[in-house]
Length: 122
Picture 1 (cartoon, rainbow, N blue to C red):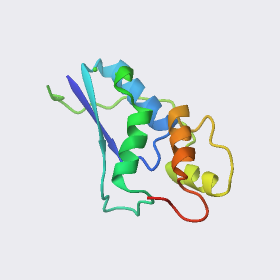
Picture 2 (cartoon, one colour):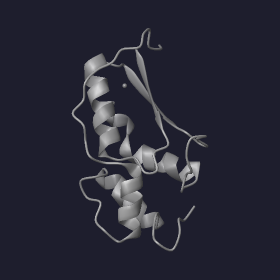
Picture 3 (spheres, rainbow, N blue to C red):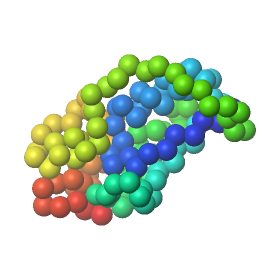
Picture 4 (cartoon, helix red, strand yellow):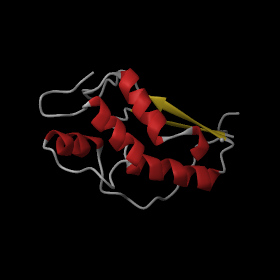
């Protein structure tokens, strides 16, 4: 069975990682496909889709996981107090984001100079 997980991922954070890990464990997916929404109609995006794809690849390496789902099923997950907009605001203010995003994502945000107060780098 293949799991599909999509979001804007601007940036991906540990809430996304925890949700996907829990779904993978709960459903026993053979494979997980992570989809980056290129142009969401419901909100503004600060970063180009190609950059967000790279961040998602850093957050969800293929080694983390492995048809189509035959049903929709709900499951429980412990809530995490984290949001992508909060992370972008923290970075813009020069605040730490450790514990909110996977270390590889934090490194990419730093390397690419994303979400700084001088405006997003695309």
